[in-house]
Every structure is written in C-alpha cells, then in structure tokens.
Length: 376
Image (cartoon, rainbow, N blue to C red; front, top):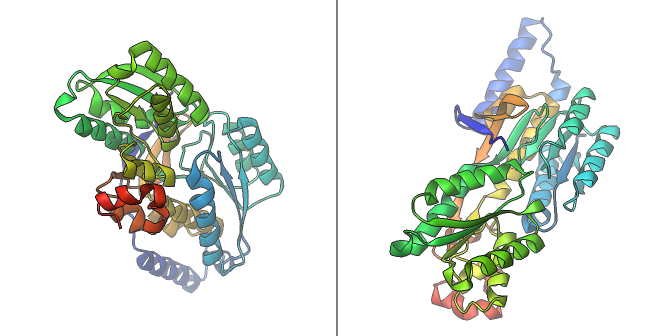
C-alpha cells in the first residue's frame, strides 16, 4: 500500500478575509468590463445545490450520528435551506458503494463527497464523475482517481498519539513488553498512516509480537484475530493492544474478557465513540483519539458548496496542504488536528465540543467511576 505523502504549505485563511477578497476580485472583473471570469455572479451565490455523500459503514458510530447530520446541516445553512444532501451508506460493501456512486453520477448531483471503502476500487467511479463534469472530494479517506480535494485528519498523528499512549501507559515496563497490533483495513489508505505513526512511537520501545490487518474494519474479524493472538502468545504475556479504532478496541477487550482477563491491559482506539468513552471511564479502554469530526464534516460541506459555486479563493483557503495519492500529485487538502482522549481529557474534548453530555456518558453503570475521576 502506498502511503499518501503530505506537504503542509499554509494555513486556513479567515472566512471574512476570504469573502472580502472574493468580492474585490468580482468587483474588479466587472469594473474592467471584459474577460471571461468563468464564474458568474449568479453561480457564486447559487443555492439549489445537491451534494452527494457516500459513507462507508454503520459500524463506526460517528458516520451516522455526526458526519451525515453535520454535512446536511451545513449545506442547508450555506444555501439558505435550498441545498440538499443525497446520502448513501455502503454498509461495508465495496460493490454497493460503487453502485451508489454511479447512481449519483447518473442523477447528476452537483458534487460528490466520498469516504471510500476501497481507495483503488473507487477510482473508475471517480473518473466517471469527472468525465460527467461532477467534482469529487475525498472525505476522511483518500481515494484514488482524479479527485478535486481531500478533507481528513492528520492520520499519521493519530497513530503517533496511539503509540505514545501505549508507551506512557506501560511506563517503566515498556521496554520489551509484548504488544499486539490490530491494524485497520488494508484497502483503506488511512490504515497505513495510522500504523506508520504508531510504529514510529513504538519501535525500539516494545516488542510487536503479532500484527493483523482487519478486513473492512470488522469487529468480528478483530475479535477472531485477538483470539488467535491470545492462543499464540498467552493471555498473561500480552502487555498492551494497539487497536486502530474503537470498534476494534471493543472487539479486543471482549476477547480478553472471554479469555479470562481480570485486568485489561492498555488498549488504544480512535473515533471517540460513546461506548469507547464509557470504557475509558471504566478503565477498560486506555484511550481513544478524538478527531473533531464535526469540524471535518463542516469543512467538507463548505468545500463542496464552494466548488459548485466556483469560489476558488475560498476553496484554496480551506485547502492549505497537499497530498499525493498513487494516481495523483498535489491534491488540495484540509487536515483537521486530533487530540488524545483519556480519562484526563474527556471534559475538554467531547464534552467541551458538545459531542456528548456528562449525563450521556455517566449513565448508571458508570456513575461511580465518573465521580472517581471528577466527571460529575
């Protein structure tokens, strides 16, 4: 798997400055009275926009609970309620996602946001959209083919946070400790970046005894792989588990419990799912990575609308970075920062951002543990 190469080239420009700049350019072009500006005044303020949104699965709670509602809300806000989102979830089926993509092309949506299950497999569909004049923005995961932009998080940093958390959790016991790695789906290019970041923190500090690539990020597959690791290494010989996301973490913890573990070793995660936050409160999952997905979805919706309207200055301002895929160089990119979520950072992350309330997290089974860590 080719790991995307990121080049950071700038920063996000303030929205007010962007709006002012675009107004000046538009006024100057009109005052000059000539030249093909390629973007009419009507296009700049077009509101009847249809954004196609293709998400990969329902196992990852954030997609249905946050990503889709946020994109829908933001598109409506940017278009005074006249824009709409044509949404489809692939439910972990590559062929279904391809069918959904082609349907959106045939129905002539204005722009497509796609979180690709398989980066390589989606490339012909991306090309078909571009041939039809429909821009494509890769969302959360980098897709191959001629995409117009990429919106995601700093995925290598996600892995670094996960690896650093294992090292910190093990402390003086880290040197030579046995760590099992449950990596993400090899068809997802983000998986290679998570793994690279984690190994950068863990190599030469711990002993990676077993590694698994979990097809389609399936918790069922992850539990099977974790059971294999337990049989191969021995339950008591596993010092920590690198799980690439919260679904895999949940599966790993279930396997450890069923094998008779009375104390769960440090287990990482990603996505800040509610059940993962509760496991962190309970001391079963050591950490997750909070990726402000509301910010990611908001930026993606804004990029999609700006692209349809031809607002190149705003579009460029939102994509200060550049990423190379195996099929394309210099893709305009927006990377949203990430934060390690542990017992100590729950309040200033998911609670402060309004993702969850204390009441949602601290239900009856977790009340005592919430009180013990000052979350009440």
